[in-house]
Length: 392
Image 1 (cartoon, rainbow, N blue to C red):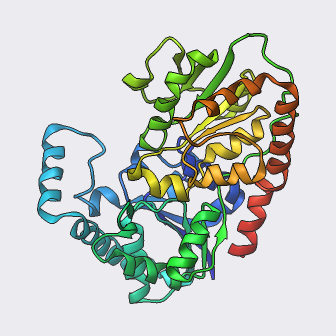
Image 2 (image 1 turned 60 degrees about the vertical axis):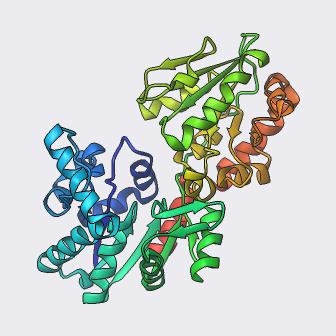
């Protein structure tokens, strides 16, 4: 059997958490893949690393004309919205998936390869299922996100338009299933009867923990990352509590801070290179991990671990996690007692725990626990071993 084919809406990029995770865990195995098939314009916005560029095939523009245009000019974007209105979600994804699967069948004898599918949306699931129904082949799937999954308080988690059948087929015919969190593993086992291996973004300890406090009397907090739906509302809930707890927050992000974040205690900083993030974290009293409380993001909040979690634990400064009690990362961090947890933003006494960041004994306990987790569970070597055992 030949090396591998990669199929995903996402590229192996230096500017996206998923792409960084792939590079850290797969390492040299990435160069054994013969083709990287991209199924979304998302892969254009966050392009594949230069060393793999010649192996990339972007199927989105040619075969998925109903996907959101990368360049939002008035004509193309209006056309996209009109077609999407006419065809709705399911036909939109199926239309492109059928075209792509037909093209792959013409170009590649896929049953001669091992295939890694990294679904980010419906299209990867549809394409791999269509290919398998045409000709069974060996594939492993890595669920870093489950974006087709929805949630409401009456129905709980659900898939629309019969997509649960597609998910069931995809997971049960895979040679192996990787998932991004222990909570996702529990969910897929209960929902689909599937056994999976947990594999998420790792990071090695940067250096010894920073037990010393910053000279400032104020509590200096930092955040590095995106300001999308999954993160924003948790930060917004934090803002009113900064001043009364003598804390200030620096946000390093490509996205602009929202109006609710604008205040004297919050400063927006320019993003830094990924290699410099942990070094800069260590100049602060604590680094925050925000996780949405909104039901519209519950599929992410409850079932995902962000790449930043391992990076923050490995930085050697206390982690302040703000998110609902059901959130996967909140559960992970609480069980290991390796972070300060705020899971009820309306509870003022929880915010007073910010002051413990300046207490040496408390700080040392949190940091020592975080170091053990970083060494034993979230290191690059620990995750790479899981990958190699499963893939090989």
